[in-house]
Image 1 (cartoon, one colour):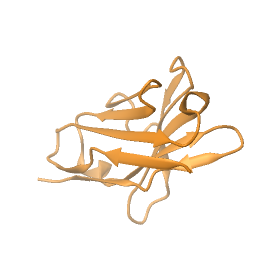
Image 2 (cartoon, rainbow, N blue to C red):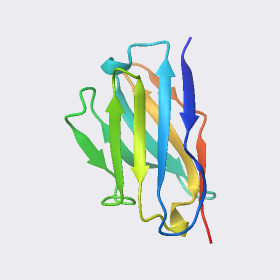
Image 3 (cartoon, helix red, strand yellow):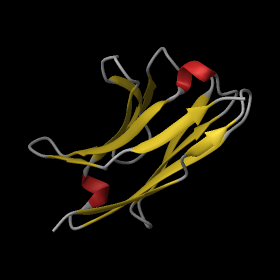
Image 4 (tube, rainbow, N blue to C red):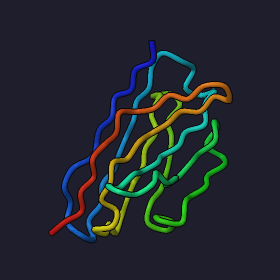
Length: 116
């Protein structure tokens, strides 16, 4: 049974930072590429960042490029998203996703609100 434990969301002021994390269990974490998506109210889901199984390949979506860093710790079955210089338009529900070629495992979503 796949389980996902998420943490790190909340309310932050513009210009602030947050680090999101997802810890997975129930499958071989190191065999899965990891992704972060986000979805704001009334908007389509968009890719924030993705990282390959070993961590050697990383790609960012345009929305947060230069302001976020994705990383993973295969020993801890955890993927991270460090977000800096946050803006109100970054307010969204952030989802982690593990992709293994034939299956996807999604986190429940982490609310991030950027507001003064």
